Amino acid sequence: MREKGPATERKTRRWREISQTVILAGVMFLIVRVAFQNFRVQGDSMQPTLHNDEYVLVDKAEYWFHAPQRGDVVVFRAVPADNPDRDFIKRIIAQPGDTVEIRGGRVYVNRRQVHESYITSLSVNSFAVRRVPENSYFVLGDNRNNSFDSSRWPRTPWLARRYIIGRAWISYWPLNELTSLTIRIF
Image (cartoon, rainbow, N blue to C red):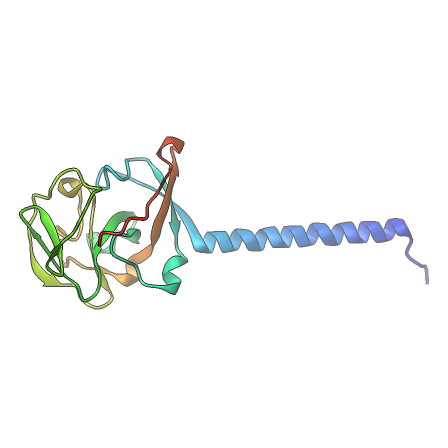
């Protein structure tokens, strides 16, 4: 039997390091793809917070550990809007067990007016007091008068938890719009 020389050992070590690096890079890629997703805003429903053709990074892993919160901007499958080929982006206004109402253009959750520094005009819609069912959310666009959201959905105003993809975490493109999207409304 021939003994391995130093050159053969270096080649073996180099191939082992290269294969470990490739495998580690593949695993990291899969983890990132499972935990994060990019999303392109289409339309004006989230202005002035987000604009048409702006890109956001969606954190899909956050809701594995806790429930969505009021004020979170979420991306969801558009099943409530009967357009399953497209994802939507809206802000959570009320969560399971809350009561929600829109009166005089102002939004009330649990009979308290919601402080919404991110909107520029009041809603023209009204919405009678209703309780948000279990595993559901009430969502609105920041541009209330140009948003197809819970206040206008024909079948049910509730977004079922199972349709939420994740929380819009940061707006990253264009670079001059780089913004964190964390706002609490109470």
